[in-house]
Length: 68
Picture (cartoon, rainbow, N blue to C red):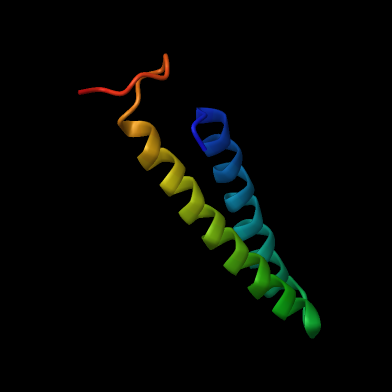
């Protein structure tokens, strides 16, 4: 998770899963509601991974060296 691209991809995937999960929970019924709940949970977990990736990038410069 040392690349800014990883953070971007995790963020896009997390938001997409949350939107998909919300749409499934709102518009569909039956078992699809629970699929929406699972999608939302996975989206929230990926958001946590995205935040963790951005936290590890704060202390680094773009050339890969650490600030002192």
